Image (cartoon, rainbow, N blue to C red; front, side, top):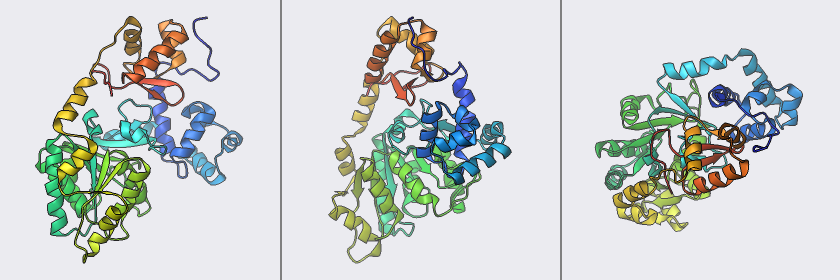
Length: 387
């Protein structure tokens, strides 16, 4: 036989679209976060099976009784088909970890959001992103510094990420927009809400020139517990995090901690020793954060200029080099597929497919997802990228 037989069920041609509603369903169940969802998917093989699994099997998979009760209630009361309809009505969309367009940097995290809700557009060039965070009670110095740093970064092709909050966040988004660049706002609530409400117009401008994103489903209010969770996504979407002004205890410092744990670069703007807003940033510098005097410090540390960004993008444009690669690209054009399904669709020996996929992954043509599934690094009809 050319193909091996998978122990678990091989999904059908429309499996990704069918399974999307289960991603959305699990994402509204309280108590089932990224780690538990991965465990359930690994145990049952796919989310559809996990959603319909009996109670004893869910407990055997490691689900605690409170989360189980929440899941059972959602199964009884939730119409999964409505979840996508509600997103459409809100002008939003959802990316799951199986989607090839899911942000590559964010996918690297061990606790990356299983579902990322998006209002606006996320482009592949947004991979070149820098986050700006700081106090809501920004001084004029903090706002001025933010503008002075953001404009040259935008001119170098960098996307600016922040949290749409008052103070430094708002200054970063506005500076990016005024410089004609792209910006992404990471929310601590559902996309049917804007927080703070005073930034409704700013949010609309962000959506028109980038995206608002969140891991929280529609209807989620901006509760305090959501903000630390949100902060890891701000850093996770970025190559580095710049802290402009932050008191000693600040959410911006939590974002910097997340960045360090995620292997991202941490930058800090020095401030007046006599000001409360400078304590956190100055302490970051003491602890090893890169001191920022101007945008060049950020670009040099990340080895980024407009020329390098454009060159890296151009270098990654490749085409299939042989008939096997071409055949695999054709089958992966619409959705991610399991390696056994690729074997069945192409009729090629699994050893040939496995070795070719390994080379294609090295060349950046495909991404390997969980469960031996593969997806194109970009959507159908667009150039394939080589890192």
